[in-house]
Length: 366
Image (cartoon, rainbow, N blue to C red; front, top):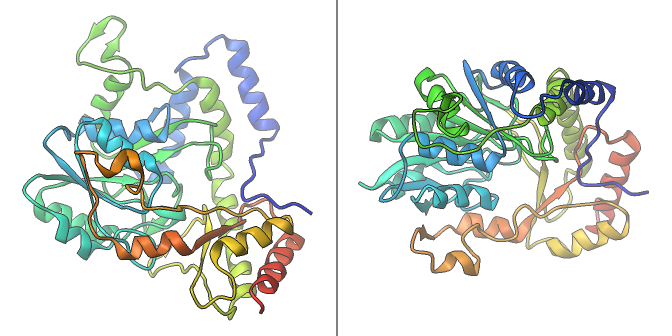
C-alpha cells in the first residue's frame, strides 16, 4: 500500500474543455480565462478576479499595483513558502517578520510590534487552508493606513466569521498543481476595488487595454486558456472536495487523539478550514522526533511533508540580504522543528485513513 501526501486527478470534464480550447486555436488568454475569473468570484466573495500565471505573480502584481516598492516595508509571516518573501523583494520592498500563533498564522500583536513609519502593507498567510485572524489584522491595517494583501495560496473557499479568504484585503491565490483548485500553474487576484482590478488587468497584459495602445508600464502576467480550462470544471466540485478534506481531517483527529507527544491541528473559532494540509506537531515529549516519525511512515508506504523545515529567511541567500529583517520569531522556529503533514486529500479511502491512523499510533507507541 502506498498513500501519497497529495494527488492530482482530472476527469472527462477537464479533458473535454481542454480539447475545446485546442480545437478553437485560441490558446492564449481568452474566453476561458474570463469564464474562470467570473466563476471564482463567489468563491472569494469579491466582485473582481484577475487571473495571472502563478500565485507568486499574484502577490507581485497586487503589491506593485498598490504602489508598494523601494523604501517600503511589508510585515509578513516567517512560516511560509518562499514565494511570499520573493514577491516582496521583487517589488523592491523590505520584508519584516512577525511571529505566528498556535494556528500557524500571523499573531496580530506581534504584527503591531513590527509596524513603523516605513510600513506600507501587512501580508498575512492563510497557511494549510485556515484563514489568519483577518478582522483583527484588517483593523490594524486600517488604523495605520496600511494596505492588506492576503496570501491565500492554500485557502480556496476558506472563511472566517462568514467572510471568505480573499475578501478582507487584496486576495492572492495559487493554482499550482497540488492546490485544492489547480491549473498546474496559475494565480488569481481578488478585489472589490474596480479601479485596482482595472490596473491589474492592464499590468498583466503589457500595459495594453487594446492592442498596441499602451497606458502603463506592464508585464506578461497572462494565464492561458488551456490552464483555465483545467480549473473551470473543478470549481463546480470545489465545495464537495473541500468537505471531503474536512471529513478526512476529522477522521484523522478522532483516530490520533491522545497519542503522547502528538499535537493535532485545530480549526480556530469562527473559521472554516479547507485542509489543504493536515499538519500535526511531533513535540519533544514524543518517543521519536519528527524526522524519525516521517521516516517510519515512509517505510510503511505513507507519504508525508514538512511544510516548512526552516523559517523563510533562514537560508544563506536571505541572511545578509539588505531587504530582509529577520527578527525574533520563537514560535515559528519551534514549528519548523515539529510540523509534519499527513495525507488528507479527497481521494483517500477509509482503508487509507485507517492505515494512516494505525501506523502513526504504532510509530509513536500509542
